[in-house]
Image (spheres, one colour):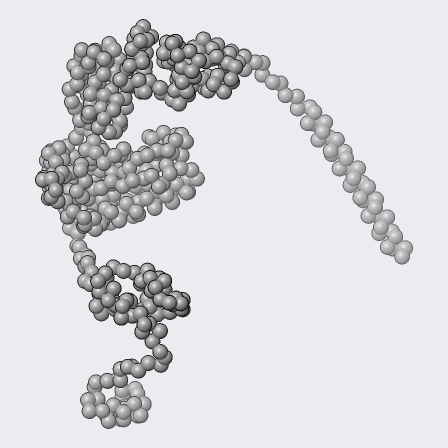
Length: 498
């Protein structure tokens, strides 16, 4: 009766009743072997090696014994060896790191980080565009925003944080970052302890954010932002494939594309995002300049020094004191409130950025200064110019400097690219002489050809020939159809007679 109520057979119920404890099933452990252990010769030594170095991989250890064992091991026992190692790790292996799932509080944290975009192969007008993305993520809703950055600098932090918080319209309570040099620095040499940078703290105070960092060497503590890097880049890659091209007309067009990708991603997180917004601090987001200001003096060699780099400026600014507004990719020089020059910002902590257009007029008047000029190599704007100077030195070393400066002056007056093309043309012809006069003549010849092509009378196209061709084709088709119809009629008549 109990077996019927329990839904089992009488034999199974009888077997349970015969046991001392009917509620406990004690199957006999399988302790016997059905075949000889194929690893009995190597396993004791392998176990000892695993105890000494638990990070050893099973395949590497198997290949080691395969080389040391006389005659080698059978390849078919590799899987057996891997299962034995896996079982040993479960029973005797070292402790592994535990990851604790976190419950994020709405509106509490904005996590920031930078990610490199080199692998995506973005180009601007065919040229590779080396850049990073400043990436800000809200851990609760996974809302995200990103801006183009040249490097992990304070300037890119200013620009990215300003854009992200401006997009939000509200400010979270805390900002979480890793220990990049933008946010922290080493307090004592040789120690791992780090502290916040003064400028980073000023930015946090400006927005009312409490700065937080993860532990050194534990990137998973900023896992929300770290994992979002991969998701964002996969999404961008898919949109690039749908677009059909990775090339953009300008950086502004690429930024528009990036913003559209981010907006489409954030639309899917709108439910949790609307819950997160009320938890953030109310009020307008204070504006933050995305540049750094520093006073510079123009020396008598028509240069300034910014971030340990030397930049050339127009000679009219010599002896002036200027305000340099340092953006992430440019420097704007102000005299009072008037902009007097704009320079490209270069990376590094040594060297010089010399624009030959600032100095060429004075060098033409003082050609002897070219040979010993400290930054002479900066006066070769392209490989063709360097090749032209080497050619002039081989032909006539005494006048090479003066002849090259005349070519460089022509490039400043006309076009650097046009002169470069002319130099490549002259260097490719062995009998041509490389000089400013030859370059000017070549440019004038090309200009005349362009003018001639512009003033050439437009071609008149007579379409009557196409009408005649179509008419002939129509008549031929008629003749062919008549012939085919006559052949068909004759064939049917032949069939009737037959």
